[in-house]
Amino acid sequence: MTLGSPATPAPGASTFEDSYAAALALLEDRPLVVLTGAGVSTDSGIPDYRSPGSPARQPMTYQQFISGPQERQRYWARSHLGWQRMGGAEPNAGHRALAAIDPELLITQNVDGLDEQAALELAASGRIVTLHGRVADVLCLSCRTVSPRRELQKRMDVLNAGWAEAHADVESRPDGDVALEETQDFVVPDCEICGGILKPDVVFFGENVPKERVARCMDAVDALSEHRGALLVAGSSLAVMSGYRFVRRAAKAGTPVVIVNRGATRGDGDAAYKIEVGTSEFLTSLASRRA
Image (cartoon, rainbow, N blue to C red; front, side, top):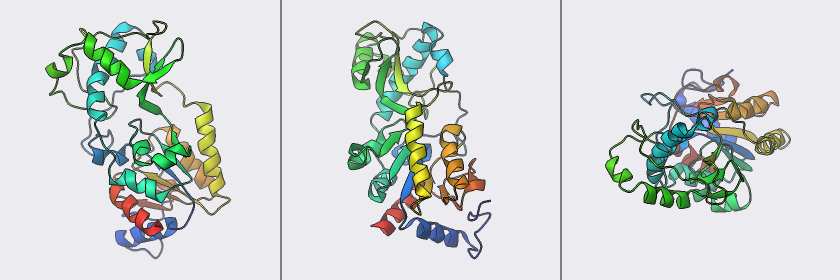
């Protein structure tokens, strides 16, 4: 049952303002695990799929990607343009606040790398888990070599001269790609080492999150119940189980869960407080309280 939200205030908290203040008070001095979603990056100019008015989502699945060269051509043509835009995004106030909040573990469902850019010390200490990988890395499906995306971008620029300029007005989409249908002329490079298929080192729909990442996150969530901790969800609708399972785990253990997200989430019924406000605003307020 949701104890605090604009629609269902906590006992003794009759207004949104009361619930907001109560959620901050709950999180002020507890060990925290933070789970972030696309809503944290919208203030950096990266759109999301689940806010009101967002585009319908039709992401490529892993099965489609490996099904043949035409599907990979479609993926990389769109992603090549989208990366040039996502790659220029900068961390926003919410990302910087997360660094100041200094959680026990930051679990991000985002692949944009902005959490790591804003929280260098947190990343260096190994306390950021990129649940779905990073679009800045590229994996060869044959030899398993991981290489920087920027190197592949340079190769695609050479092989597809003028492509970016010819499609400069195409709409950006949240997965780091663009809304483009005419992709049949795009040239896709192969792995320079073995000639294998190159794939962004991210978890596609139809793939599983690596078990070791899940275990690391579960251990951190479990530890919260032993140390009077709390789980904070920021900017995620929790629509997919890869993130929602941590909310279920925390709630089952009696660990308080606070969800900050515009719009309903799958975990609203598990939350001690659900706050419908921008993540940058709430995270900045929380960072000030924990300073």
